[in-house]
Image (cartoon, rainbow, N blue to C red):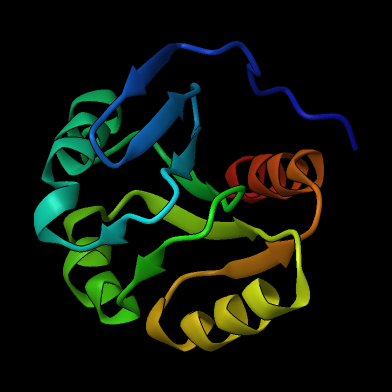
Length: 133
């Protein structure tokens, strides 16, 4: 199945916590090395998501974990309800330890979640979620 979605980058933001790439129907985040990511220090990114997708444009969040950082997965309990149009969450990991962490985090997100070891596979999965909606 070939996607009809646009893979053109809409906007790239370099924030204090990392880099966020916004596409028509998905975001790719790359959090900076050593950051302790929290609901509080994610407010700028949350606001950008609201601006780009509002409450109606369907989107998938892709976490491209190229760096090592800490994250409290209970933060999902605060962020996911803010976005009724969030269709899923993909995590791209590059080692077995981060894969185990991502597997544990899945229980905190009440949306479709999938773990990948390749960013292109995550994008393809995201597009299928959006198209099938």
